[in-house]
Image (cartoon, rainbow, N blue to C red; front, side):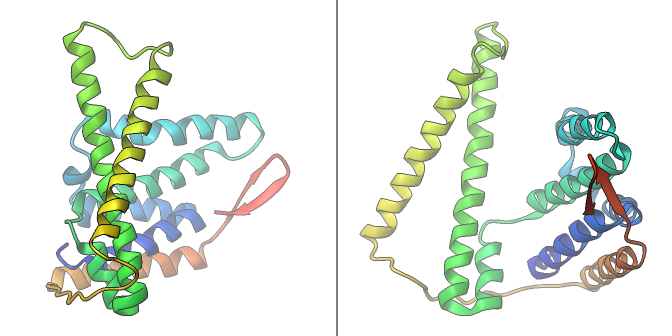
Length: 221
């Protein structure tokens, strides 16, 4: 999908559809398989396992508490899969483009800049995690519970230092609020078709919406 506006719109609608209805979650996963180029967001079984691990654990907890753990697992998995698809499809600067297009060169520029800095931090975090994995393999060590605090505290400190450096750079360049930016977009018929498909799934999920009950509390999901 080339147009980031449609991609963002589809991500919001599909995530909401998966959260509202189990039918919407299943259709969201089918949308991802058919329209979302599934291989671009999940390239290995390990990636799929990491995405499904947390919903799996929480689903088991829901079953233990007397709720519908399978429904929870399917819905949250669908939300995470769509999020991974959007992250894999994005290109640098698209959040700034969409922010300025939606809210103008003042508020929109600030929102887009925050989004781009956040995405850059995620990219850096992924690279740092990969470097740690390589270093551990070279030393013949494994990531055990004993060394996890030391490893991730180092990653956290690195992220805080990078955030501080970016803040200093923006200050030195005189940034206060807003900015000049002229976004341009390119959309195809396939983009609009998949966007309309996601809108249809969202509307259907509203009609077929159901409830998830856990420990006596009711949540619309």
